[in-house]
Length: 267
Ligand code: NAP
Ligand code: GCO
Image 1: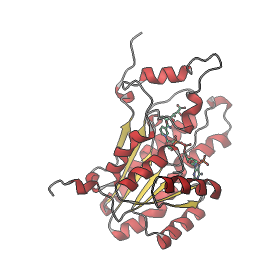
Image 2: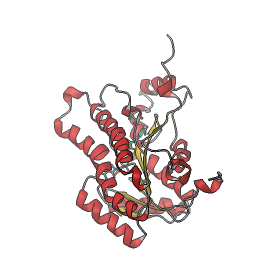
Image 3: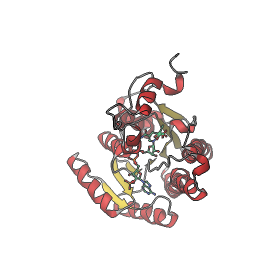
Image 4: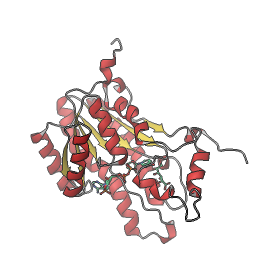
């Protein structure tokens, strides 16, 4: 088929972005809306959903929010059914909700490790499982899993997060392998270091007024020489949600300003 810009349009599509009340999820939801999709989102509490509804309204987007814990399979099944009845069945799922606990591994309890794996790995499985049957029935769909630098790299204090995001990379490839025959594309976005509430503790100015050492470390480690912004993920998200990527499956698109390509500055 000859290429036209129409291939990037999402008109008539229903997109569910999990945890899209601020940060990366909110920006991805706005970009999908700008490309024509109808947006639904969820977050843990009704209060945060209502606050976010106002943000969407201010941005001129008619989004519908649901209070739902992505780790609770029964609640997810119920919410996906409710979305189908109230908005339409889901064409695009973005597994964005995530948590991190920065604790040295030998000080981390097994319960803390499980909590991270539950939100960052088990929940994308639960969410994908809930939407795939309708995608099969309607002849296709898009699943985008928000992975991480930690899908490829390790560092001190993030063992659970790295284990979960590494697992999410492989879940992505497996969904592509298992359901590609039904015209379902499952890909990942691997954001680099992005300025959001999740990374705020790594960017705080020190008591002595100096930059956080991690802030300097990341800027030096990134060929683009800056932190990413949630807006940096907008174009990649629209691409992976649209027909322009129909033969891209099981791929992780790293949006990292070049971190994974770079050996680091010589001393
Ligand atoms: P964020 O601002 O903390 O957003 C994460 C959202 O997920 C929050 O709204 C959070 O709810 C929600 N959430 C957490 N647990 C949930 C649950 N059980 N059910 C429903 N919602 C839940 O973080 P972000 O930086 O935008 O990150 C978004 C995604 O990108 C995450 O998967 C993260 O791991 C990934 N990521 C981030 C970076 C980065 O540098 N920032 C880089 C790579 C990947 P609350 O508002 O209630 O906390
Ligand atoms: C950390 C960070 C990271 C990022 C991100 C990188 O403590 O190292 O929070 O893990 O948020 O996922 O891609």
